[in-house]
Amino acid sequence: MRPSRSPVRFRLGLVAATLTALVAAGLAIISPASAADGLISQSRPATASSSQGAGYGAGAAFDGSTGTRWSSAAADPQWIQVDLGATATISQVVLNWEGAYGKAFKIQTSANGSSWTDVYSTTTGTGGNQTLNVSGSGRYVRLYGTARGTGYGYSLWEFKIYGSGGSPVTPRPKPTFTDEVTHHEFQANCSPTANRPDDPIIYPGLPGASHMHTFVGNRTTNASSTASSLLGGGTSCTNPHDRSAYWFPSFYKGNQLIEPTGNQVIYYKSGILNYWEVQPFPQSLRFVVGSPTATLAEFRDSPGAVEGFECGDISKSWDIPTSCVAGSQVNVRYQAPSCWDGVNLDSANHKSHMAYPVGGYCPPSHPVAVPMLEFKIAFPASGDLSQARLASGRGYTWHYDFFNAWDNPAILDALVTHCINGGLQCNPRGYDLYKPHRGAALTENFELP
Image (cartoon, rainbow, N blue to C red; front, top):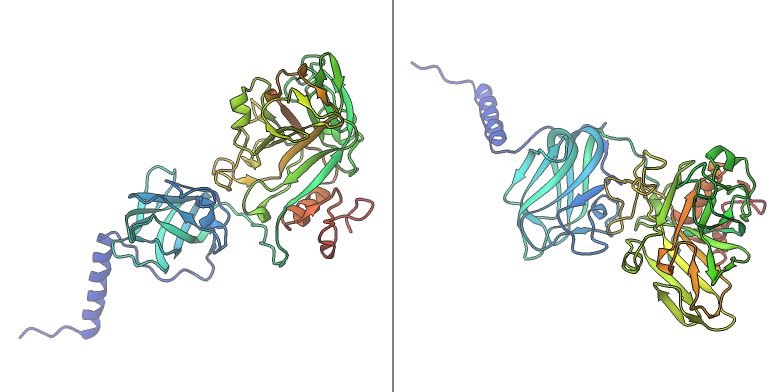
């Protein structure tokens, strides 16, 4: 007579067989995420196969906000992936779908962003909030959708990854204030200090090698300037801690040099949608914005917002106006890239270590959001400007240089935190005239409180 099987042994065998079948089907079933596992994807750089438009970029799914979302084109397949910065062990994925969800999709990991391993797969997704316990490792994690659940694209409010490892990042907390946010900036007000044919970034140690530049800010800037020499120099900026060097091609009317008068405005703003994630510039960072060889189209179509030249009723002119109302002045505004690669303080072309945001978020190649500089320079020139030019040529060759040298990084950090991260419109000491109840970043003497 055949002995009967133990009920316990039978149940264990059935569980083992079921797990084997699930794994063979491409599903990863493990115990729930360990309590020690943390959220490792928030504020990390992300990319996607497509987006519905500006404001719906991949970064919106990793910003910690359920008020923003990634939304793809209405086609299959589509994907969204995040770079965790280093190899991580993944234990759980949480998907918060908008109405446009994925019916068939996979969660995949990769060490290099090109070869992918499935850690979860389904063809019966129903959207909503999904918590998926998975087991895998990799630097990159992506959702790969092959069948949409609706006639729209794929759309996620949030895509959260839990585990351990990766590149440690401490996101700046989202502000909890209730004020309406219309600005996220503070000003550096600095007057001209010199006009020299020097450029310590492009032609370091070579006085006279450049076209004429007008310098504002640091009073010692010349062809031989270095980080240490700038920190030891004085400044024309209202904030005495700002020893940074700012310069741009000189403005001429015929052969007459027209120098800006008084304080010029250099805005420190957020260039990304999540303004609370902007970090201060690292000491000694330097870069060039624009090009002395740019064409009108290149100047006009720059990735950053370009206000161009303006005077009187003329605005957004891509070249210096040929005539301005008597008594007016020529203003020019041009925005800098605001995403840093997180490693290099300079690069061979003095640009590639910086990048413009894409869809309001920093790209994976340049994951660190820093202040977006916007020079607003005013030249006291009006009337007939048919002979007006820049030292570099036509107006669309406008460009400028920045060499960071705040003598106390804590001062810059306080201004970034209070004004940019805090959603304010601040003066040079971090005070918003329109929101006095929020206080100031610095005292009347430009010191920390």
